[in-house]
Image (cartoon, rainbow, N blue to C red; front, side, top):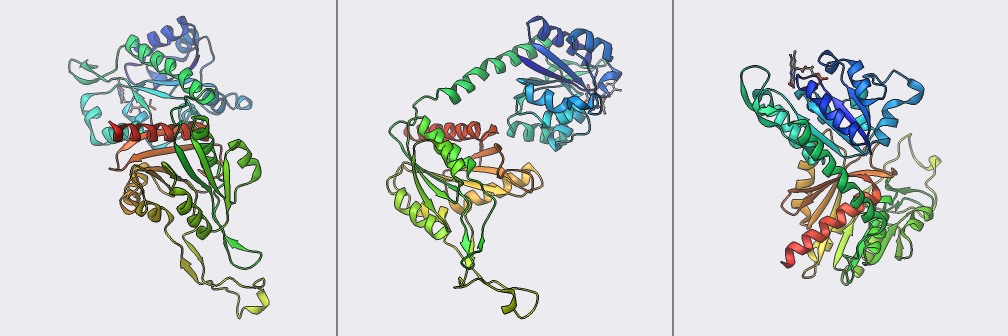
Length: 416
Ligand SMILES: Cc1cc2nc3c(=O)[nH]c(=O)nc-3n(C[C@H](O)[C@H](O)[C@H](O)COP(=O)(O)O)c2cc1C
């Protein structure tokens, strides 16, 4: 397996040498990515000799290779040992000012972190907040242990022993093939269930040639429909303005094309009466034009250089589905939010959950460069009480399976 070992600047960096040796001796391909400060504790020649690969801290070395992208994309696992308080804070913020930061952002591999620092630093509210945020994102932690620290003092903050980190890394690696198997040969755990999925983005006409719309491609919803069908469910997809090439990736499922929010609302209400699980992944227009012009709105017909459109509210599709929920039916909402950080994302998600009353909410951050049209996604899946059930990251097929896992677990919890 291909392992990236990130090393940050703490005394425990010397123990990461033994960890690197364990990885290499057990046959893994190892790339060590130290921070600049880590090299003040253990020098570059040691890392190169032990890993048998070139080592650098900078994104600007070997530029033609674009090292961070290559390292990040090829990695099966990234281990950060030791992880300093500073590196944890940088990971939380997504800083990318060195090779380690950029590699972490360029990767969808699982990340295992072994923190090491003085007790006060570990227990500081800032560090604990960072650790919680990273855990919510799906980052795995090993340690820290309680024990002797750098000086004569002792307490929580000592890095776990190299053998313990090695064992935790191997157990994460062991779980990887089974994730891949789920994608290639999913179990039929949804057999007998009728699953209704909406996907895409609704369009509200302004005149015969123009509309108000949004950037949703429908890829995530289509991936959910395809994954549910692969797991044995009988699937209906209500597809709002989805490109045929994307729809084709769903295989042979029942598809009902719709255009506007009102069309989607009607189709979802009618179909949900037969559904065991309803997943509202479509991005719906909250407003529509009060009047749709019969002919094309022409510049010459407006009085000045502005055009005022009057919009009226559309029906709240998700709330309507929740209020008509039949016994035992599970309803999943989606929330795409433009936010500054994960805390804000969670807060918005929890408020939406309270407003809508659905059973699960899949939350993702969107913006100019994230979420829409991409083949990858990051979802935080919340239970009805607002607790984070899963943080899923990866291809839209992987995040689709993570959502279906949460649905299965929630249904099982209701039955038992
Ligand atoms: C002798 C010494 C030991 C240190 N040990 C740690 C440590 O164990 N954990 C930690 O979080 N910071 C430790 N620091 C502080 C970090 O080196 C410092 O925060 C640095 O900016 C970390 O940079 P990096 O995270 O980019 O490697 C230590 C500093 C010194 C001088």
